[in-house]
Every structure is written in structure tokens, then in C-alpha cells.
Amino acid sequence: MTIKTCIFDAYGTLFDVNGAARIAAEEPGNQALAASWPELAEAWRRKQLEYSWIRAVRDLHCDFWQVTEDGLDWALESTGLDKGPDAPAQRRRLLDLYRDLPAYPEVPALLETLKARGIGTAILSNGSPEMLVAAAGSAGIADLLDDLLSVESVGIFKPARPVYDLVCQRFGGTPDSVLFVSSNGWDVTAASSYGFHAAWVNRAGLPPDRLPGDPDVVLSTLAPIAGLEIF
Image (cartoon, rainbow, N blue to C red; front, top):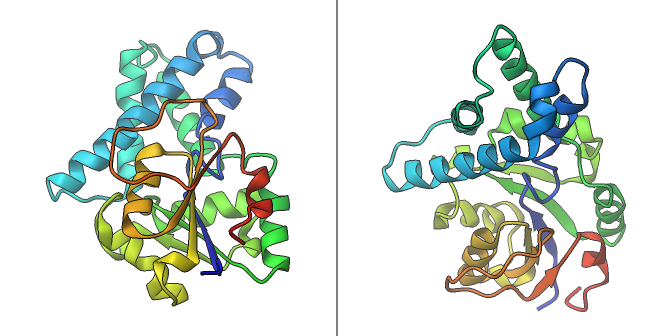
């Protein structure tokens, strides 16, 4: 089956989730954050994901922005960055930066190539519609995507099956005409088990998750996607 649609996870795949903490740490007056921003970024992302999974299992869905705020608050407390007179302003700054995360450098060129070939492209994300519009706009890639698909339309976070249903509902065809791309191993295994072709962008060189569903290909960046033989 020829690939007709290429679907991307957003956070960690197209957008650098470490960008908010890294950029804030480089700003004047943030010495404490400069010394611990990698730890903060890792804890923030980990709790953001954990809270989304737990809410899905417990049927306690909420906007992903709430999960993002809750994850940040936990991370700030765990790193001791929740104290001091500047802590509230720093928290606001980190959240503002998260709305406008930078895209990875190879993203625009890849999307332009896929668009030129007539491949449908979209984001499929836990992010709320407002978050995705803001991120795609600030990264300058909104015009290169055919749609921004959010879990808010089904009211449950990934990796619930109804989330992946959104792709063929929007673009038609069958799952085997879709390439799903994510930096999250758990997301890739779920998409593969669903029936999508799956590419794992393993930027950190992590071992594979011990879950059903294997990626078709493992990459270190998004750049080689357009050259894959499955297109």
C-alpha cells in the first residue's frame, strides 16, 4: 500500500519540548534555572506524560494545558525552583515559552518536501487545539500542515484507540496507507499495533519499549523520512 498520509506527533517530535526550559535558562537573572534546566525539563516532560496516562485510565480527562501546568508545578517543586520572590514570574515565563516551542531544524524542509509530493500531513497530538495552533504558528509551519488533530475531539489521551481513529476519519483510506511518526516509543508501538506504518524518531538513543508493536524504521532525526522506500 502506498503511503498517502504522514502523521506527526507534536511534542518531542516536531517541537522541542526542552526548548522552554533551555531558553528561559539563557535569559538574564536565571542563574538557578541555568544550573538545573535539564533536570527540570526532564521532570516536566515525564510528569506531563504520566499524568496524561493516569487521567486516561481513570477517565479524568482534562485539557492538556492543565496537564502541562501540573507537570511543571511538580517539576519546579522537585528541583527546588518553586521558592523565592521570582518563582511566580519564572513559572509564567516557562509556560509562555511552552506555548511557542521551537520546531526542530529539519521540520520545515521535510514538510515542504512531503507537501510537494502530494502527501497529506497533519499533527495528531494530546495537545489542545489552542496549543497546537500556537505552536504551529510560532514555528512557521502552519501552512505546511493539512490539519491539527487533537485528542480533545474524543476526550481521551493517547494511546487510546479512538485517538488514532481520527486519522482515517479525517483523511480516508486505511491504516496501512498512513505513516505515523513519533519520538515517543510508547506512541509508536500503539500506532504500529493499530495498523499504521510507524517511524520512531529516537533522538536520545533509548532502548525500545517492551510493548506490542514494532516501528518500521528507527531514526535519529526527522530528516530521512522523505527518503524512506515506503513512499
